Image 1 (cartoon, rainbow, N blue to C red):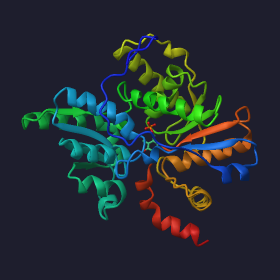
Image 2: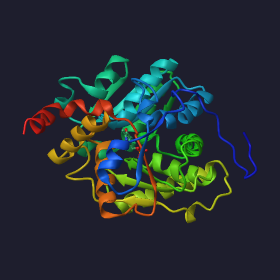
Image 3: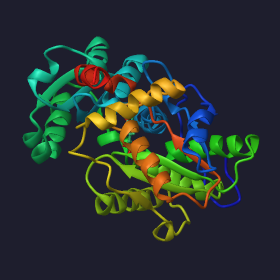
Image 4: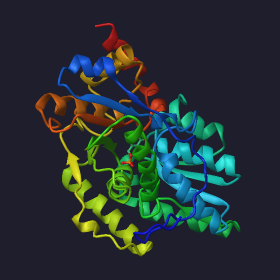
Length: 341
Ligand SMILES: *Cc1c(COP(=O)(O)O)cnc(C)c1O
């Protein structure tokens, strides 16, 4: 599809169950009493095992990989990475070898649960490194893995953390096509769109898609690691690479990037009892399942910001449910303790 503003999508492999529903959270909206309507874009329903936001990016990333004739995908993330799980499953589905470079301890893999259980189940090759070593040596680890597969006569392809790069931006540009239809159908005008930001690619795509598909929305990301400064830089960098790679005519430097900082808590993937209590509240009130690493923290941030009046200028607030259900399991013991208080 080429349109009048001079851009077109690159190749895409249809892998997600689309479109996902946009649903109102009416009981919660009433309880908040701020007069605003809260909506949820159910990207946790992009599949069953392959659920969440990563598959939207991987539709473009894996199409790029397949067009290059590769047979092996190498990527990285935490032991409970949703991105690695989605890549492992999609790799198996497409007949590709998948090699995961994971950050974590052997204890975290002792009892296989959640995402890493599925990684193992579908035959991904896994190498595990402690956090400090992983962070310091990720580039070298990736280069080593690429070289090793080449030496074995394979054709490997590297996907960066969270598939958040120039190619991955397209995933949520495309999602904005769906949002445009959702907004028309539900009479939503000038909404606030809010998502969790972990590697920035979802927000980068939403920022771009908001412009390209003329949604007229305000896009904000609530960071679940690092800080505002890091994400402003990372998201702009991804948009600039995207512009350059696809020779796009957009002034990406002028696009507004909003990062709402202050909800990381004690650190990435560290959950407070208060956070788990909110997750339980939402499950009971709306049947809404959030996870303690991404969507729960962002949703907690969203509710806090609504209470502070941050979104008072909008009638509709749309939260992107980016998935993460398999990340809930490792918190089962803490959750039990919270629920029994
Ligand atoms: C990866 C992930 C995010 C963050 O998306 P990014 O594009 O990495 O910023 C949010 N929610 C869930 C459940 C995720 O797995």
